[in-house]
Image (cartoon, rainbow, N blue to C red; front, side, top):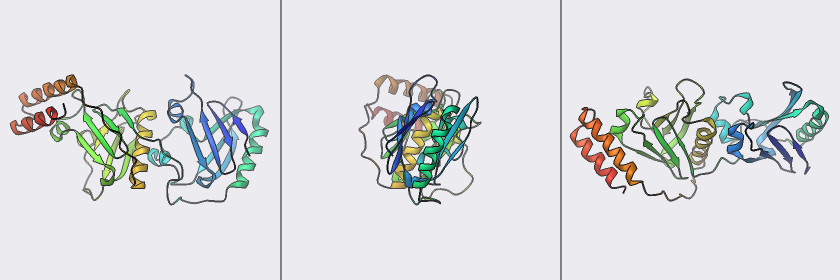
Length: 281
């Protein structure tokens, strides 16, 4: 088709085998859209297209992906608010006729339906990082790393030490929106314990969110990137990690000493963790 339909916060470019969605940048544009930048959506990944009245003199054109086609929606698991749906194009009501034309054209090109056997839409790529309440999380394409924060991490996590999780040792990702109670990101290991889950604040395989920590536009693309790598089983090339800041290491050792003096860390645990931190310099 080769045409472009521009709405509020995004523009859709219609191509013969895909729709290229370009998101605007600006203070009114949802931060998730800005973080995504643009997404190419193959027509094979779409199940249907809808057009419905919107609010305050608008109409909403929406592409409906097939279940399992988009790692971002799989990670979100239905938790995105309507305004944060990256497949909604909000248009002025006067563009309704034009939107109906493009909706009909798209419907005529869609040939697939039902669950997709694999991800058909590219996930946000690594490297990715965000700050949770109790840790800094990073993903370089091959390994997820959690570095515990001395101000937020529980003693259980400090005792376990900073964590590294190769994607080939994971089976999935659990993302709970920071906009709800007990928001968190939890990594699910392959062949892991099938018993009752440990609370996220005590689980070394999880980081917890909070006000200003783990926002949707940072933590959800992170979760989608990890999930795509886990499902693909062919992780991206690792990005070399920067050397640790000596001041940061010193601060973490100081906090470890406080835990030791409080009796929350044994002599042996203190010595091992201190040696581990010093080895990162």
